[in-house]
Length: 113
Image (tube, rainbow, N blue to C red; front, side):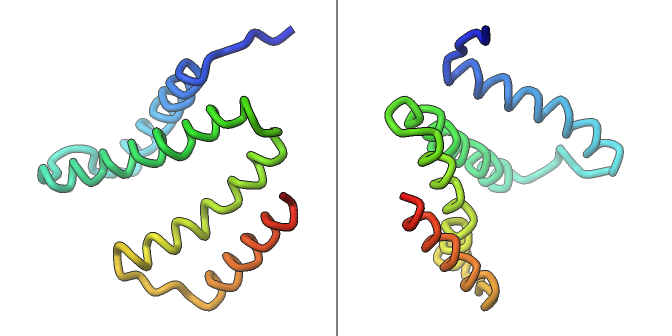
């Protein structure tokens, strides 16, 4: 029998595991982890906290009330959502393929729901 684990415990374990796996890989490739400006550090912190706390943590929380299959289908909206945010906030222009793929994914999610 599997033990039940709270969402906070699960999220901490996932993030710690990712850090333990990615830190040595980044160091081996010579990726800079220090020396960034305060603004860059704040931006990176937001890039970590917002998706984790709102997105992934929200999925862990909402699965209490929705079937796992519904929550899994909703995760397919992450890429189109990120593309839309990049266009709106960063001035990125998505490719036609990205727009088409996002439209197909979004339509598929609505069909699945």
